[in-house]
Length: 299
Image 1 (cartoon, rainbow, N blue to C red):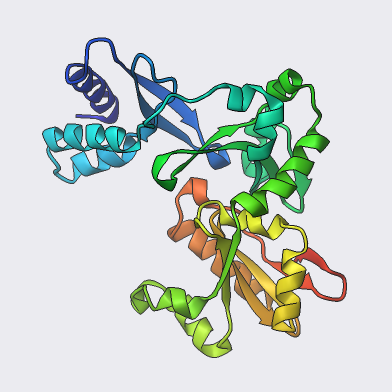
Image 2: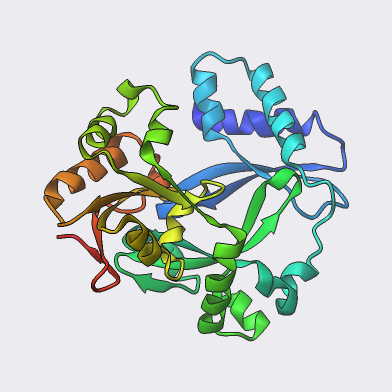
């Protein structure tokens, strides 16, 4: 069974296993870095929000020998687990006086997202772009997001500057930063899985992982006002910043930039071999200087 046949099979089979007044739909979803996914959405009367379940991972499980029956069961179980208990109050989003408290920012790669950036308000920062979301907190502490498009600003009658001001205030409050020594992280990972990082940590004895407390899209923390400066002062050093993924960055305290090529090669290898396409943030390496209080691309 090829992939398209698999999608049709999933939609047909699940349609027969849910109530007759519910609908099973397949949707094309554009994610970060222009990646496209096939999502499954099950809608029920009286519930105006539903999780999107991406089907490519299930197809890989099918190719690995998992039975279709087990896949149907898993998809329905995932849907029930993430389905919100209550209807979404649309006024939380349509009324800007209420929505403003949930607007957050997110860091993405500029070049890899040009198609999306044509449709959404954004700001350029180094080789990144800053885009904006409405953060929806659902049951169990899980998060869903609504990407903010130009038409939303027209509806709210605000401009992108006002949107940015709200996001810069909200994001550190709703998604607080989290900084830890990489040794804490490495202790939970078999060393043969991260040989380069393990060797560097032993050599330098100092490396830190910066993310948010949810470890989702945590690279955005480099935008938090004054945070990089505060970290540099606490470490009493400048630091090299490696964009290990959209979810976190690595900080290496140093007195001088060192060999940018070495770090760049490491970042590119991780991007090429360890990350999904939609998790890549950048191939560049960055340097934060306490003297200039600026983050710059390290050439």
